[in-house]
Length: 262
Length: 215
Image (tube, rainbow over the protein chains, first blue to last red):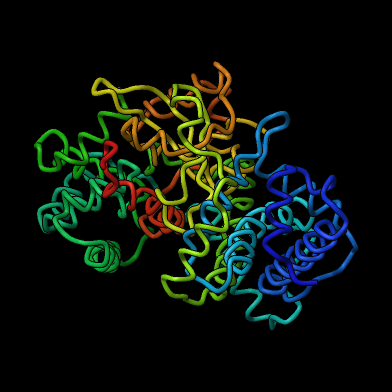
């Protein structure tokens, strides 16, 4: 049963789907159940190569989860205002299609939370369709993400500091800005970072990717036989932060930084 | 902060579990977002106007909302944020000397990713983890383009301010806060930076939005 604008209007006006008329209830229930299940199935197939239907995704479960995802108990359902307002600006199809698109955006976000709760990674296990070699590789990547690279022995601070100064001296303005931004926990997409870097997103990303390759190649060359010094990034970014803040090279970032620290 | 000052042998068991949990949500989110993006297809201006007329009277006007105030959780108007950032809930942390409001967005995830994200409350899931690294001052007018969704408790606000003030320092968090923030970052290539860059896009529209109401 396709949804129509009047169904969505009634749902918005009456607030709770359960007290809507039968036709509205049937249309939106069908829509939500179908899209919720599709989202969950799509995500699980993608990550685990399978989807076991254990009937947890009935309407009541999914609807309760969806609404409580965005609404605090006893508070207004302002997410609906956001949903309708966003649909106004959606440049697709008829009005119903715009609403369905926005609703699906909301459903997907809540569905990710639902999967985390009802289909945790431990329970789903590794993908069935991976070969043992692929599985081993996947596990290796996962271990690397979770753990810390092996360290032979922490290097002396003075040594690290000298090394960081060497690297710092070879870095250009843009590289120093992005390293300082990383150290300060600012996104490279932040307006202030782009102002100080004097470039657009795309150029800063390109510089960042080149910087990562450059720094890795240099560390490989400087430490051919042993593990890389773990504290190096901290020392290098601290040097760049000092350059940015104390040496007044990034006024825009500093203003934002100070506003947060105030 | 992001690059930790200590050199531990490995993350603590709690931090490992938290990072694993976050990575799972990150993967799920990326996959589901791809599907949302595939759904879009453009229409003309005429239909766009039809959309606006169809919703007339249905959306609560901002002028009827309570004025912004410290401690509120507000849902930013979709016109203020990129389409894939909506719904964007933010917490109002404090008023600045220039009369702006320092606001921080809530994460898409229910697990803190980095040390400057804190698990502030248990529910609702869309308003649990606050991203203090992504806090930003916005004008009173910009913030008034939002709906009041909820309010932080006094303790929640105090915890958020503590984490926010730790920006860039090696400040020690009290245990009750340290237990609720994300794991440290050790490497420039950590994919949490990709997440931060994507989440930082939240403000890209606001930086070009007028600070005051214009005719």
